[in-house]
Image (cartoon, rainbow, N blue to C red):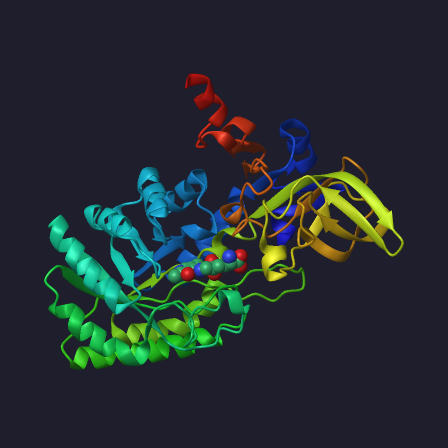
Length: 423
Ligand code: LLP
């Protein structure tokens, strides 16, 4: 798991060829630390698993949209899966060709739709009848056809956390599979729309891949129904969702398992495949490195208080997610403690009642599997500057996002004291 990229040599926790303590002493904490090799290995696994079939792997930018990390995916020939105008903007800025950008989301605004049309993105993954009408209308105004796929909701249970199950009947995502044929019939009649594909995404952090098979079979059946109606598509987008290791003992599927399961079904349709992996490309490659500010004990509890909090990594607070935590310098003694942040919320924790090395004030801890949905979900709650981001490549490291400072935090706010001065 983490062994290859985050591992102990003697008492020191390394990322690739660098002791993390060295980086932490130099840059100060907190920061997200990413292993370039881990990312590259994951990309290679995906490419290898799908090499015999025409496949576009679109990295899901929502997992982590740091420009330098996007550049790694771009340099490997990947496309980009986006969910907002902002993500499309970052993708284009880094240099992703617009014909490798797909865009899903239940609430695309007019501005975002126009932005996507003007830039000629590969596919709007349409999530409602109303959205289809609006895209057609706006494309007419822009004077350029929009490429669309319909996101169908196959009503499959991905057996993951309910907050990240997206393909169930009652979820807000997509169009009911039973309605989809009718929507396609309408879509192909629209003047300003090219119907190019079909899309589904059943959920995230999926550890048992069998629901994928169920989903692609259901969607594959629909593709054949469409063919019968004379509606020919080019792309079959099966979304993302492959799970990663959060606990050392977690058994995770790999891209090959996914390929073996879905390729026979997709091949039969003759459509090109699109994948949208996010977490599985970047999750295990990242760790959040923090420092112990204080330790304290109450009657029945020990606390380790860090200089990062739920504003930096929200997952434990909002999903009760487990993240493995290691001491950056191994200790001989262990302790059971709540590992918490400085935020004024009881839900501000990284781990509860966790057995961990007996760290002291100023020691560093590494929260693992934090590369996905870590920095991308971070906030400035409690007026806290967001963490730096650092990329390790062999025995070198590079700052890929500076730490925010106090002035940055107020940059966009109106300064009432200045206004008063000028009045
Ligand atoms: N495609 C679509 C349409 C999606 O909605 C998502 C994720 C992905 C692709 C990428 O899924 P992945 O391969 O990363 O599982 N914040 C949550 C995860 C939310 C996932 C949202 N959609 C978490 O921290 O677990």
